[in-house]
Image (cartoon, rainbow, N blue to C red):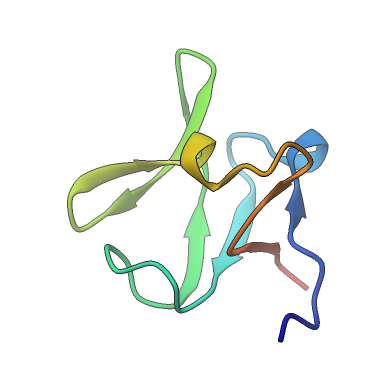
Length: 68
C-alpha cells in the first residue's frame, strides 16, 4: 500500500533529486537525479536511461517520490 504521494509531474524538473521505489528492475531502490533530454526527463539505470514518461498516470510519476 502506498503511503507517500508520488512525484507530481508539474513538480518534476532536471536536477531534482528523487527517490525510487522497489518496482524498478533497472535500478535499485534509492535516490537518483533527474536529467533532461529534448524535454523528456530520465535517470541513469542499468540499461542506460530510464525515461519517466513510462511512469506517468497523467498527474504523477508512479514509483517516483520527491525526496523528503
